Image 1 (tube, each protein chain N blue to C red):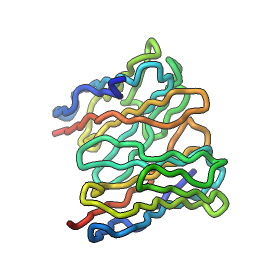
Image 2 (image 1 turned 60 degrees about the vertical axis):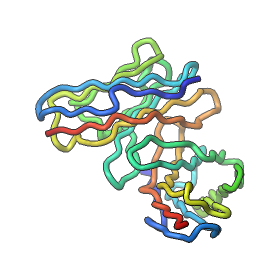
Image 3 (image 1 turned 120 degrees about the vertical axis):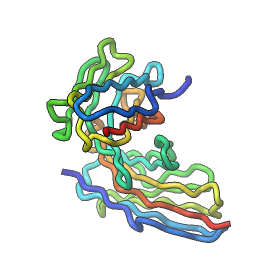
Length: 111
Length: 114
């Protein structure tokens, strides 16, 4: 069974800092990996999706990388803002029929 | 495109009662997923539909849980004889189909079993 781990579980940074969130998975035969943010009590918002054939994806201040062979992905957030405060989740799928999520990294950006 | 919608947003029920949740995916999305999320955890996969066919079910989905997607559009998730351990956020997601597996989530239904 695919297992997904996210480190750190919580992170607090001052506004303006660049930061990296980590996601690791045990079965490298993934089809894709998707990063989400979740605000308290709300649903998930898609941030970036990386296909298994891709190495990275970028959207604005966000950059996600994928290293399938080592079972790792990172989400890089540049110039963090208080509005970035949320829980960040990564999810992988091997077949597209079932997705496995990590437990998330809770990010607080201090003004 | 109004996004994925879920109804109700909150449900409080007494132990032993049956509850039903509804999910309306983004129109033309033929894949639909249900997840359960408890506090401090990531979503746990429950079941997956492609059009009206239920193609994958988690072992978490006990015989008290049933899901349907009768016409390949909206879906319902029913929990019979609810237990306190069923208290959680129930999330629905959809994706377009074909080679696109990017998931779009609804706001969730918060279930509290007293």
